[in-house]
Length: 93
Image (tube, rainbow, N blue to C red; front, side):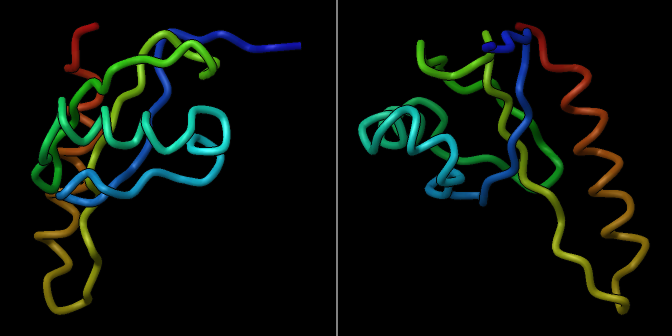
């Protein structure tokens, strides 16, 4: 049974050149290139809607960049993570 949802959230890096194997196995390398061309870059804490693909079980793929945690900058990482969640919820399809 295929589950279709409105949005799937996936983390990536700021250059949008990393997508998980699960997505790439379904869509192929050309989808990764298409996403990169349309989205280009995302700042840490930001979310963007990527182009959809018929082989994904979702209507929209939402990409975000999570912060890298270090104890020295704990509050900055917490703030950026909050921004990730907030940005994901604010993205309009």
